[in-house]
Image 1: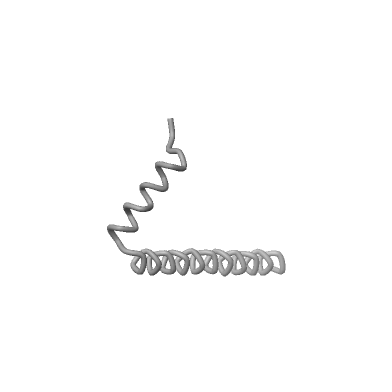
Image 2: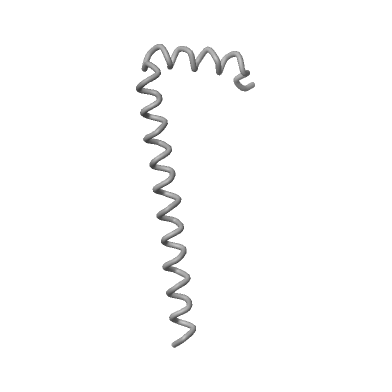
Length: 59
């Protein structure tokens, strides 16, 4: 037994009334920035790992 779309809509309305739309918008943009930074960090880490493997192959 899960939540239907009606229950989720009611929960979203209640959360919107409690926090206000501007605070929710700010939280959403902060979360998006965090995810973007995390993906960038993963990509940089992957790149550095590839460089280490290439250096080991050369040695």
